Length: 156
Image (cartoon, rainbow, N blue to C red; front, top):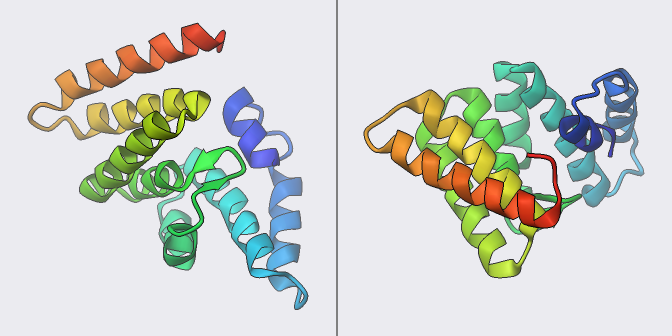
């Protein structure tokens, strides 16, 4: 929960505690697969925030097949999480695929806060990639993100 809250608030002051806790879970013989996925999710969010390409790649390999079937984890859609990891790794096409999945899933599932974040982060990736049509698509995603976040009273 700490990396998730830190991502939203921008407060990274507790990341070391989260890393120690996640690593303790991963070392525990009694850790269930669900707890291990959550621990890796937390470590992944920290790696994304830090722009740690090698850690993002390692965690992507560790969780990709496990989280794909799980849907929404701790207020993050798996598509968004894997999109963020892929973006951090510099794999633009893979990131776009995951972000498309996240946006479509959130639109269809009524997950409005997650939709606002997914649109925003997808647009961020598109602007960084800067391919043909990316700016126009990013503008549409940012408009949607702003509309949803404003509707919900979220800070833009």
